[in-house]
Structure formats: C-alpha cells, structure tokens
Image (cartoon, rainbow, N blue to C red; front, side, top):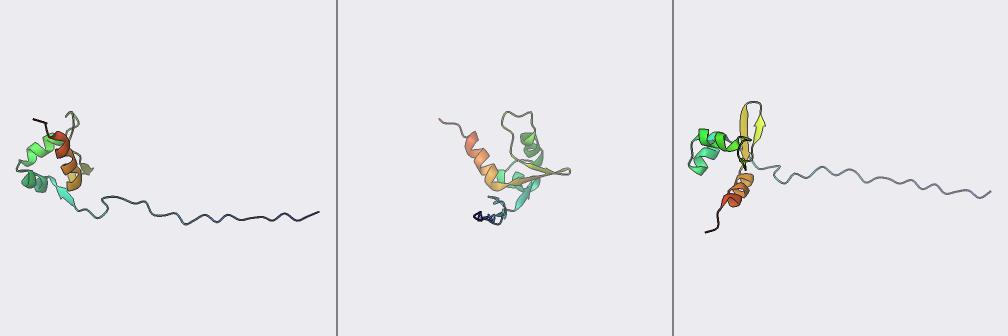
Length: 82
C-alpha cells in the first residue's frame, strides 16, 4: 500500500487589523467648537441622533470625542451647491 503524503498547511500569521485613523488624536467637544467657531452646546446638538445627518463622534463614558478627519468629511457633505 503506497503511503500518502500529508501536507500540513501553515496558516500565515494573522495581521493586525489596520485602523485608518489609529494615530489621529481625538478632540474634545471644546476643541472642535473652537475650530468650527461654535459653542460646545452647538457641537453637542449636532451630535444628537435626532439630526438628519449627525456629526460623527465617539462617546466614552459621558465624554464626546471626535476625529478631525471625520469632521472634515462631514463638513464636505454639508456643503450646498450654489
């Protein structure tokens, strides 16, 4: 009886998930308000889920944090064509 060769498949090591914004600093509500020249209360209101297109944010406990790249994308979506 001929012997069967058993091939062992070694799986490649799993690569770490790549995060696009992994090193982008997170901004507070006050920092975003200063950059957009709005009040922190306005920024909070824009994050509410009741809005048609809410401002993208990350909630950590009671704190809202933001990625500036997402805010820039959100702002470009808000532009109206003249």
